[in-house]
Length: 402
Image 1: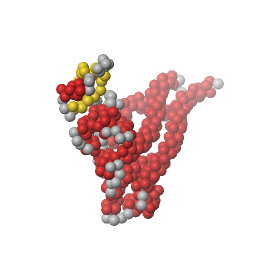
Image 2 (image 1 turned 90 degrees about the vertical axis):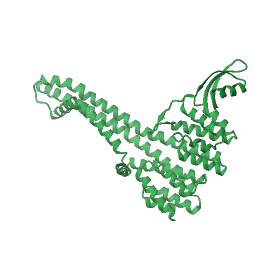
Image 3 (image 1 turned 60 degrees about the vertical axis):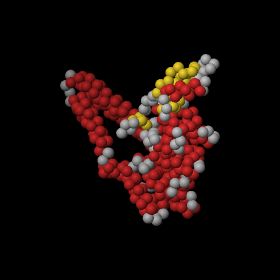
Image 4 (image 1 turned 45 degrees about the vertical axis):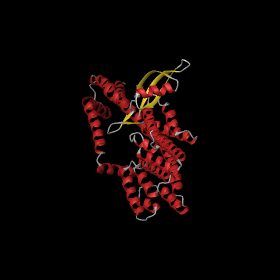
């Protein structure tokens, strides 16, 4: 079954358009006529990919997946048939490839497939973990509950992603502006002033000599230096694809004073949130933890967590195994231990995720509050240094004249 975009005229003479699923364009026309519509144009639905995966093929933006999940949860919770809910939601993504994907899912559901099976046919758009949770909701008869939980988890993850991107992008922009201003001063302003100093024939202060030497170096080798920096960054990114190097970098990252705490909290909150959702949807504990371990972006934490899961399989408690991994915040371990005692491990995982997300929010706030003035102070010091190097010979000349 394919998806077609159509333009048609109603019985009252008004133009309308939309999408429809059918085995062929001819069948689509028949369906439209059955709805008392006169087809004007029927074309295969086209959707431009907003992102491409490493292996090629379409995927969807995270915010679109979050939005669609919340809307599906609301409509199904209101007893709307799945195929009708998918059609309504798909029409809201007019120029996004999410529309074509949702209509494809709808087509498979109308052919008799379960929702989880239809979603699994688009692995680049719907992660395996996503499909597994939907399947568990179908089996347990709690599909609306699972979808609501998925939507809440994705919304929380999207909020964290925005905060992390804000913490990364803002300092990068400030640093770029600082380097740009410094480069203009060193490569444009200073050489113009040096031309005037050459006519004076006097001994220049050491600070002025140093600034002039740096300016000459940047003028002569600035382009090569920029290319070398770009090549070093590209080489570093390429080296991160090697597991051994990535493990070394991730291990060093966790030891950094402030950034290490942010990375640890971010990964631990994602793991705890996923584990909680899977357990609450009826997935066994070990399987939930195993699936949640794949959400860990830090390779050291993922490796240690998988080792902890093996010990849990052998009979060790979850809290003791996580404590033995040495990569999770102590509070998470303590809350899980309390959950094991009270028989609510999933609930304690959820509460620990809430706490870690709140802690991450405060850490990012402190990080930005400290970094912004530091970059501004650094830029001001560089500018003052250059200005001082320019004016010192002028002041010496005035003193000599007086």
